[in-house]
Amino acid sequence: MADSQETQIYLMIAVAIVAMLLMAGAIVVFVVFYQKRMIKEQLKRQALEFDYQQKMMQAELQSQESERRRLAADLHDSIGGMLSTIRVGLTTMARQLPDPQSMEETKLMLDDTITSVRRISRDLMPSTLEKFGFIQAIKELCERFQATSKISILFLEEADIQSLEAQRELMVFRIVQELLNNAVKHAQATEIKVTIGIQGQQLYLSVEDNGVGFNAEEQKNDRQTGKGLGLFNIENRARLLGGTLEFEKDRPNGSKTTLTLPPVHEKAT
Amino acid sequence: MDRDFVILDSVFYLGLIVLAYPLLWLLISGFNRQPLVYKWLAIALAFGFAIDVVARLLWYVRNFVHINPNSIGHLYQLFGTAFISVFFYHAIQWPTLKRTFIFINILYFIFSLVNLLFLQKSSLHSYSQTLQSIIILFLCIIFYFKLLKELPTQQIQKLPLFWIVSGFFFSYAGKLVIYAITHYMIAIGDDFILISIFHVSLTLIAYLIMAVGVWLNDKQTSPGEVHKSIG
Image: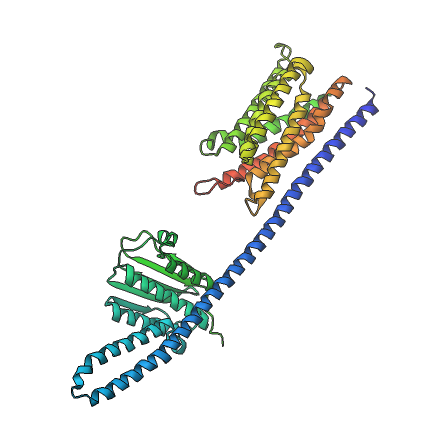
C-alpha cells in the first residue's frame, strides 16, 4: 500500500474516531445538562406544590380559628350573658319565695353551667393570649389544666422570650394546648413539665410527662379512629410555623415532644 | 515499526494498570458487600482482563505455541458481551426489558458462533465486535434515557454508574469505527499496529472513566453510606 494512501486512510479513521467520540461527548453533555434542567423544573414544581399545600393548610387553620373565635364570642356574650341574667332572675325570685334555700341547688347548678360556658369560651379563644401574649396564655393554660385534672403541671420559662406575631402565637398556643390535652387524657401521667426557652437563636418548647408514653408513628397512621388527628394538626401547625417537631423515642417511660422554631423575630407591628 | 510496537505495548500496559485499580477494588476489597450491578461489572472487567493477558502471552510465545492470539478473542466475543449485558441489566433496572435483553444476547451469541464457524472463522472476529459495539452503545443510551426519566440524583456526576456507563459509551463509540473497518484493513494488507494503538487508547480512556466511577462508589459505599443506583 502506498504511503500517501495509507496516511490518508489512517487520517480518515482518526477523523471518524474523533467524530464518534465528539458525538458521544455531546450525548453525555446533553444528558448532564438536560438532567439538571429537569431537576430544576422538578424542584420548582415541588416548591409550588408545597407552597399551595401550605396556603391551603393555613386557610383551613385560619377558618378553624375564626370559627372558634365566633363560637367563643357567642358563648361568652350571648349564652353567658343570658345565663347571668337568668342567675339574677333566680336570685330575685328566691327572695320572694317563702323558702329561699329551695332554690339554692338550682343556683349552684346554674353557677356550674356559667363556669363551664366561660371555660369552654376561654379554651376556644383565650383572651389572655390576645391581651398578654402566648407565654402568659400558656402559663394560664397550665394552671387551668392542673386545676381541672389534678395533675402536677410545671411551667418553666428558661429565657426571656420575645412576643411573636399574633398568628404565630396562636399556633404555638394551640400546639401546647393539644399536647397538654393528650398528656392529660391519654398518658396517665402524674407530672407534666412544659419548658420554653431559647437555644442558639431558636425558640424551643417542650412538653414532657411521666405517663405511659406513645408511638408517634403509630398514632399518625391511625387516623381512621381519629386518634392521630391531634398529632396531624400539631404537625401541620409546626410546619406552618416553619419549625420542627420531635417526638423523643426510646424513653423508659413517658413522652417528650419538642417544638423548635426558627430564630425569634420582633413582633410585627 | 518498532517504535509503533513500543507505543502499542506502553498504552496496553498502561490500560492494564489503570484497570487494576477498579478491578482489585471490586474483586478483593468490596466484592461481597457490593450490589449485583458491581459484581457483574467486576466479572465483565476481570474476564476482559484475563482474555487480554492470555492473548498477549500467546503473542509473545507465538514462535513456540502455534495458537493465533486472535482466536482467544472469540471467547470474549461469545461470553464477554453477555457479562456486560447483565451488568447493564442491573444498572438500568428496567424489568420490562428483561426479554429484550435475553433476545438480544441469544441473537448476538448465535451471530458470533456463526461468525466463528463460517464467516471470519478463528483468525478474526470484527463482525461480532461491530455488533457488540452497537449493542453496548444501545444499552448506554437506554441507561441515559432511564436516568433522565427517573432523575435519581440531583448531581448526576456523583452517580458512580453514570461514569462507568460513560466509560463504556466513549470507548465503544470509537471502537465501532475500528471494528467496522477492520476487515477492509486486513484485506488491503495493513499491519494493523496503528489501528491497535487507537484501540488500546480507547480502552485506556474507558478504564480511566470507569475508575472515577469505581472511586466514587468506593467513597459512597464506605461504612455508614447508602448505595445509590438508578431505578
